[in-house]
Length: 127
Image (cartoon, rainbow, N blue to C red):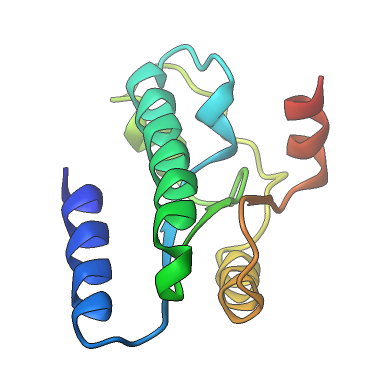
């Protein structure tokens, strides 16, 4: 709910003052994959991706971009916390938080849409 409201209000504010801008919503590569123990997370990320893609097209004529990034696994304890303590393997094969943040900034600067950062995740989504 918060992401939806912030995205809509941000775009309305930019449109009202006739300013171009970029809104970056962070989704997940889990947006199109089944994720046992993280089903609500994956479904909510599908919402983020579809919302961002749709609003990007809707607001592009006003020079307002709504981008979405799909980072893949980032080396944090997020998966364990998000699964409410259920058994989830913590892989240390992801990217660093620093790398993810730098990549997000580059995507904003280039106004690139829907990029999966991790090559392993790209392959999984493709398959």
